[in-house]
Structures are given as C-alpha cells and as structure tokens.
Image 1 (cartoon, one colour):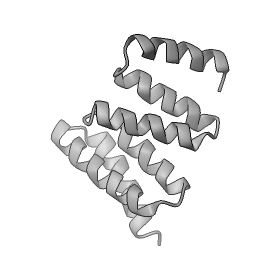
Image 2 (tube, one colour):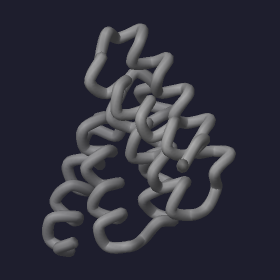
Image 3 (tube, helix red, strand yellow):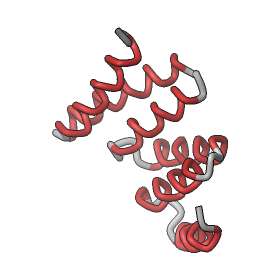
Image 4 (cartoon, one colour):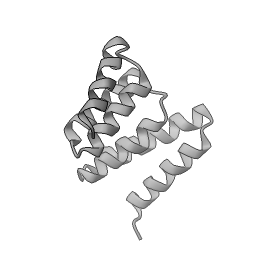
Length: 107
C-alpha cells in the first residue's frame, strides 16, 4: 500500500463519508498492507453504509476466513448470496456460493 494512495482515498472519503467505492478501496488497501483490523473496520463500515454493495461479501468473508473466524465467514457468504440474488448479480453470487461450498465442505 502506498501511503499517498491511502491518504488520497481518505481525503476523498472525508468529503463523501458513505461512498461505497471509497470504503471498499480503503478496505482493500489496508488488506493489501496486511492490516486486517483496519480492513475489517472498513468492510463493516461499508456493509452498514450500503448493505447492497455486493462486492463486500466475498472479500469480507475471505478476511474472516484468514482470521479463522469461520462462523462469521459462513454468515457473511450466506448474507451475500441473498443480497446478490435480490440484485440479480449472478457472477458475484456464484463466487460466494463457491467460497461457501469450499468452506463448508473442503473435500
């Protein structure tokens, strides 16, 4: 993560605090830097600000998996599948279903 990019994104977010794309981008920046705590914070903030932002669920679920919080990963994938179903986002729904299947039945 470049500090300049994160600072730039944060400045944009300050001007538009509930911008879904900016929240997602900042979460990804922190995730790329290995800062799971900050990444989790921004994913959860995004989920609260825009429950229908379908991209949140796969990345948040994977973060939970890396943190070995499998219960929250499963819950997140299931929530995301339902959100994607309602939105008609078959691609994201398929990714979430695959992630859920791999988690529930790793064989």
